[in-house]
Length: 313
Image 1: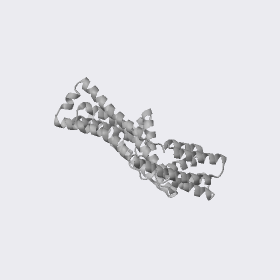
Image 2: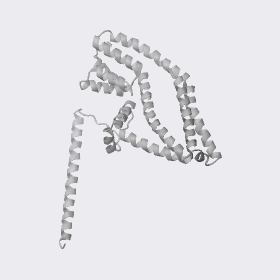
Image 3: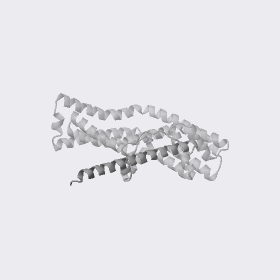
Image 4: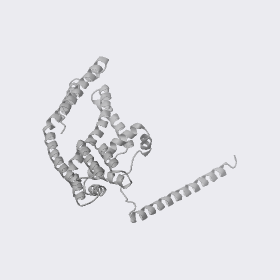
């Protein structure tokens, strides 16, 4: 026990020495990595891209090992959002808690639970909506895309080179998606597989027709320029038709959204006029059951309105 102060001082000094060595090693490693990156960027072997710092890296790595994480990652990749699976999961959980407490405080705790389940469905619907939105934007670029391919192939360029040229000339999302196709072709993937994955990421009848035309032309040969010219005119006509149909159905889509909102407005008005009325209504099993039936009917009505107004062009 008499040597305890000396032992403590010795252990402290040893820990300080290890800390200094660790900091020196870490600094030297970062300097070597930075020098390597600068040397390789000067030779053109790599390109330095400034991306934002990713959050929740540990959770993201663990989540990607699960089926849920893989499914979330596939959906996010199809939407083109700058998110990781871990970030999306944390944001959704935070949004569910916020919606539960806010709606529960305004209406009643039972409505907070319903709003949390509705928000969980809405989180998945948001990814599907982003995917559809990205697909629609890509479809609008298809006439320009086929025009670039037709000009490139008419000039004597191979299909792989024409796709890489289209990726450079077109804006996003077409440019980004075609860049993925060009990268897959550069590492040895076949044209059929690369275009097939593109059709899987952005499913649409227009893109499937284009992919089928390119694959068949690549396999059997033929007048690919003539086919692309005809396809460009067809896509232009379909683009105008889709725009007209969307304009005509805009009022019906607003109606499908306004009907459930009117129901929530009436509930809020009742609770404002008679404070505590919703708590009494949802305090019994019968009231909760009636509330579930009412919300189910609202959801069914909105679904039927959108279903009947859906027109395939």
